[in-house]
Amino acid sequence: KLLTLIMATCQRIFSRRLIHGSNYQYLNIVHYKYSTSSSKSKRYSLLFLGAPGVGKGTFGKLIAPNFNAQLMTSSDLLRDVADDLLKNGNIDGKLNGEYIKECIRTGKLVSDDIVIPIVIDFLRNVQGSFIFDGFPRTLNQAQRLQSEYPLDLGIYFKLPHHILVNKMLGRRVCINKECNSSYNICQVNEGDIIMPSMKPKINGKCDICSSELEIRIDDTLEVIEERLRIF
Image (cartoon, rainbow, N blue to C red; front, side, top):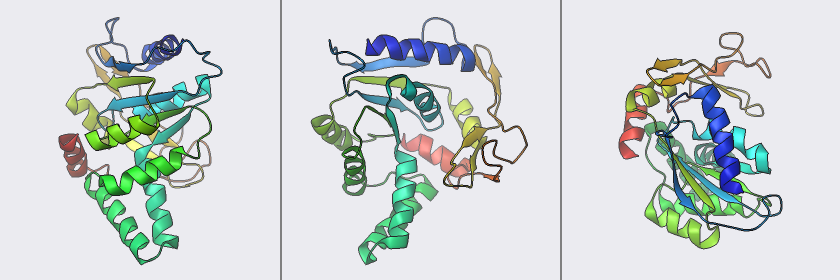
């Protein structure tokens, strides 16, 4: 039931956001654990894999409400933790906060000994189902995750390199951290890939709270290429 639900939802989303034919050439099931449990009663653990900018977060936000799941976006989680450490941490905590910020700014991966405890601590406070976006990124992370939170379903999203770059260059985020809405001014119309822009109604203004929109510090061409290279 879970696989049917996710694939049906993905198909509906793809039909609006990404037209590509019926062979799912941009979406692959990479892991599936069969279960006879009711989709309403079971706690599901899903993993969305794919290069930065492929749309994991966008799909996660649209799919999560279908089974009351919480989306864990590793980049957002690390930003929040870094901000908290810099504001409230001790000397070691502030150093870790600065290290995380530098990794984000330069497109590097945060070391396993820092990121794994952050993610595990977050998951222990999640009561229901959840979707992983951007984690795990290493074999060690995957093994630790599987030992504590075995996956039910893994989906790998794919897009050509140049489209990923253009999409990340087009991202805009609300400066209001309580709102945290995101947009994308990039419009793609190449062959079988058709992705309308997700631009705000008023240029540079958030539709939700009217705050200014900004470009993330890691959405520069140099950092984007580095992130894609590491991936």
